[in-house]
Amino acid sequence: MRDFVERACRQAGGNERICYDLKLAVDEACSNIVDHGYAGREPGTIGVAFKAEAERFVVTITDHGRAFAPSSAPTPDLTSDWRERRTGELGWHLIRQMVDEINYESDSGGGNRLTLAKRVPRVPPG
Image (tube, rainbow, N blue to C red; front, side):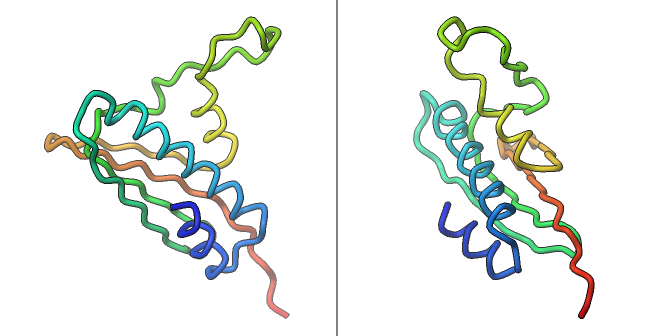
């Protein structure tokens, strides 16, 4: 999955930073699906698709795990001493830092679709 995102991003003309940010966000989102979405269930599939648009790169992640709205993810405590903080809760914070847009949809058939988009600076011709 990481290699797929890296290759697709590079082929679409993404620079090192954009590709790294997308790869990290997708990796974290997929880890959450495995750890939380499919926890206590039969293992399921995770689909990852990449689309290069004129001004952004879009990655769509699909699964059939437990529904989870990213907007409900708690904001982590970043001010306390790290030894006093709860473990976890940094994943969605990290994803929010790496991408420009997050869209989540869940359907009645148990499917989830997470769309992550990263703006790509336009390069003037010539």
